[in-house]
Length: 173
Image (cartoon, rainbow, N blue to C red; front, side, top):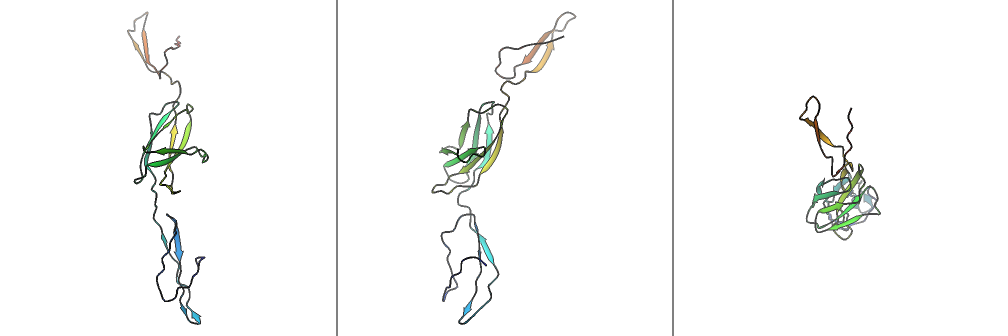
């Protein structure tokens, strides 16, 4: 049976207070008929609703080798969030007013686990919403190699830059 037991004379109504959001509570009732008591009723339960809703549609955009932009939608009407990059709960980042955060100083070709939760005030926070963000290569390989004006003694070679490089090495045989 549930751990708390209280006698309620002359009433079949009890109001529970100071409950925690998103928590299941179990109850049983036993009647007292003077010197005899009934058996305990079957356990019945209910779950309190969530009071602080998790953000939705967490996305990473404008991902580069060194940065990414996080955006999300508010779970309800909150205007404050917390971000955790990795599993370091000692380094939680507070964001207010806008559901956007610029991740900077990242390492190329690295996967980051990112979590965002709503901060509804007075210690009330939502569950985490998760995403994995992988940064790009810092100097991508050139692509789209093309050969034009090919003759018996010459050819023109062109390619698309991989990123912002301005000097290339070309080898051929």
